Image: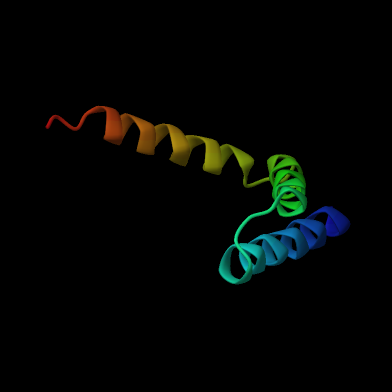
Length: 64
């Protein structure tokens, strides 16, 4: 579990730096995909899924 969390933190920091500094390239996209893969295996994954569903519901309910 400790290795998984440290890997998630490391990949998250790398993704953040890629977005801020260089823009997103193919190699950066691979790192971001790995970040998502490892993040999905942590205990926070259900909260992220619920938050995404809530945001989608909120955006779907907006009438212009």
